[in-house]
Image (tube, rainbow, N blue to C red; front, side, top):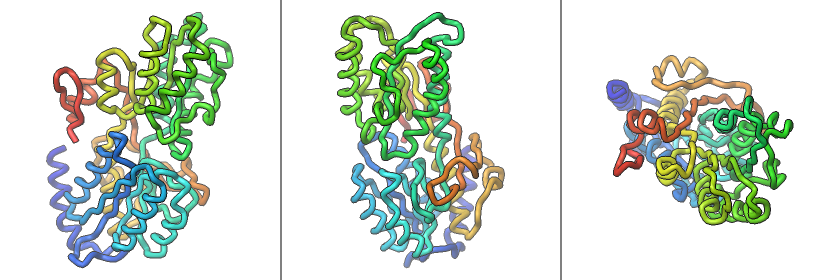
Length: 373
């Protein structure tokens, strides 16, 4: 891997001086890459921004990185500023997938290619490519974990489950929820799984801005309304770690039962990994954002070279991680967006060392994982 990164850096130094791809070159001669992240308030976006900046700078590009504090208008202004600064490539993780139509029309007019990063940007033909993890599979892995942990194909049941999903403005949130729900739907329909609150629609279980406090308040209400009489909760299926953190807090303070509730998550946030070590959260689906940044870098280099990348990019790049080229799944209402989809990993207390520490993504400090970047 170190040899690969060194090779990438050396090649990048030459590429940065030779490329004359689309968009306007900066005054210094180096290509400019504009990166727009949603917020610093969620740990994972800090990691994404840091990895992306590091990768592109390592290739000799000039990088402008913005965080928009989960404010849609601010992100529009940030992107307007990047366009005005004549960046040659935009990498955007959208706060609201449907709010960037006009500003990206400006990017298209300026001949700036756009990579939709992690979250699909909707309703614009300015998006060149989409780089993400297989978001439906993220939810599917959560659902399969619950299925196997409860042995739903053999156990008598019934078991009680409640769902907590993500931000309605995030296009990924529906994929996460549907992936999990589709696995568990047959058991709900057969009565093996029961949802005492009756809240099984995405709109009913969504959490604005993926906010921990919002998730905690909603779950406190559920516990107070449906479980205060001693009814046992077996599973709290949460789409990500920030919502799982709120649900875990609600269970700690408001749940009358004494059993260990299965709690799912996603992202590998440090607080949640600590909860997994302590037995408070059961699992998280980890998405190696360092690999997502590498894929985005190689795609960006190809675009700045004037290429039209396809499945061959994967073999040419020699990535050490699994990735699929998808030209059928992600329609942003203007057409199918060609996508590079990485594969996520289930992390539990039993494999934290192998999946997170041994791979170098985290170090272990005083018995708890800490992100290396």
